[in-house]
Image (cartoon, rainbow, N blue to C red; front, side, top):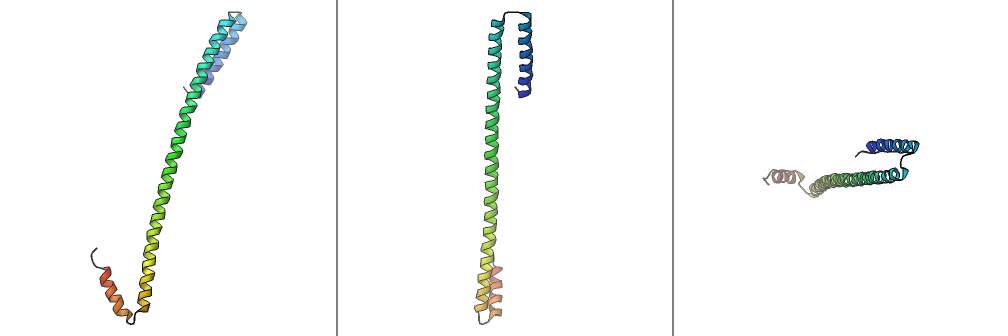
Length: 116
């Protein structure tokens, strides 16, 4: 039951209760019925709030998991880029150390084109 339905139910209950008072009908039995009706509707409203609470918590957990995975993927991607850059820098250092850099570069090109 939605909260708007419950609210409209409360309005009709209060009108019904007022009519009972005006008519001078059995107020005690009407009062007991009204208490029972209000209690049942409050229980329904509390249960609806609990269900929504569970739904919201599940949504938050799902979003947190998704964001954590995206962050992990992003870190992994940048770690790979960092490793490639570090390897390229090390290669450049080795080229600079060589007495004959041209021969080193030619040999390195052959190594890069070897099948994995």
